[in-house]
Length: 240
Image (cartoon, rainbow, N blue to C red; front, side, top):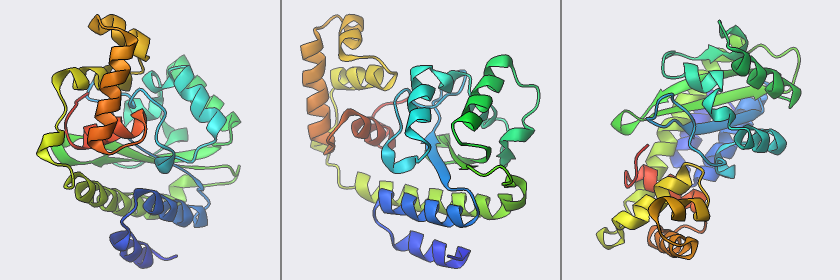
């Protein structure tokens, strides 16, 4: 699919999953079939949100995704760390002055099948920073050569994704705004805390935490915690 066709199809797509699949299809034609899209927190240091990304916005190898979050690599990932300072697209292999932990993340990513990669920082509403990363399982892949095309794909995907989110968010009614306690529970779960840990922090039982989280999912029209976190962030109901 050429770039013009991608842009036209992206504008007409009303499903975030279908839009992501479209991006993967086009990137695969460039030799970069592994794609991830995510938002960074406002915390210092910058990091990805503290939960496994929705399957609709990442197709990196599942084993690598689990290892990445279980070992808390989001805190030392050089791609995430560099994204706020490198406003243009960058190639992973060209990142300089890596700390030992950062180098370990990239080395293990290669072992997991992400042989060569590049990332595109993307600014959104309220100054929120997102990033699209493209990776290839092929040893001879050249992200520098494909950078211009992949950057353009990333930007148009980002714009279309934001429009889908806007249309989805507009369907939420004022009566569904979360209570402060519901927001508290959701914030801590977004940071990777379990219901039990959240209960200890808030000095309530884990059953109470689960009760509030169920209310959150009902109000936001989601079916699991991850979806609720993503939607709450898009609606600016919780911040990081």
